[in-house]
Length: 153
Length: 151
Image (tube, each protein chain N blue to C red):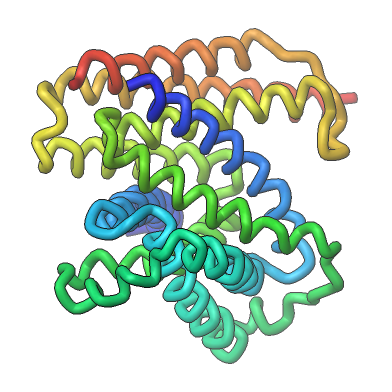
C-alpha cells in the first residue's frame, strides 16, 4: 500500500469511527437518557483526549514543536455546542429517521448554514456569491437525504 | 417524523457553528489540546443539567448495560486524533469527502444490520447522491481557488 492510499483509507476509517460514535452514544441514551449519555461521553472523552494529547506531546516531534498561543475566551464555548450536539444526535438516531437519516440531515444543515455564512460573510469570513456548484451540491445532498429518509422506512 | 427531521437539521447548524469556534481554539492550541478542552467544557456544562433533570440516578445502571455503550467518548477522541493526522496529509478538500463517505457507509451499514433499512440498493443510491453533492462543492472550491491564484 502506498503512503497516499494509507491516508485515504485513514480518512474513510475516521468517518466510520464518527458514525460508530453517534450510534454508541445513541445506544447509551436509549438505555438511560440523552443528557446522561452526553455527560458520560464527554467525561470519558476528556480523559481519552488528555491521554492522547499528552502522549503525542512526548512521542510526536511535530506535536511537540507546534507553537501554542492564547486563544480568545469565546473559542472555549465550542464545548457547550458539543454537549448539545451529542444530546440532539442521541434523540434523532433513536427516532424513525435512524442513523443514516440523522447523519445526512446533519450534513445538510451544515452545508446550508455554511453557504449562508459564505454569502453574508458572517464570522468575519469574506462574503462571496453563490455559484452553480453550490446549488448543485444542495440539490444532490437534499435528494440523497430524501431517498434515505422517505424511501427507506 | 418531522420533529426528528427538524432536530437533526438544526443539529447540523450547531455543528457548523461549533466548527468555527473549535477551529479558532485548535488554531491556537492544536487539534488534540482543543479536543481535550472541548470535552471538558461540555462535561462541566452538562453536570448542572443532569443534576436538574435527576439524571445521576442512571449511575445505578452502569453495571447492567453492555460495556460498548461507554465507547463513545474514546471513539470521539480517536476521531479527532486520526482526522487531524489524515487531513493535513490529504488536504482538507480531499479529506473531507472521504470522511463523509466513511460516515455515510458506516451509518447505512449499521442501520441495515438493525433492520431499519428495507432495500440496501435504494440506500446506496441515496448515499451516492449525497457524495455527488459533496464532490460538486469540491470542484467549485478548486475552480474558485484557481481563479484566485490566477489573479
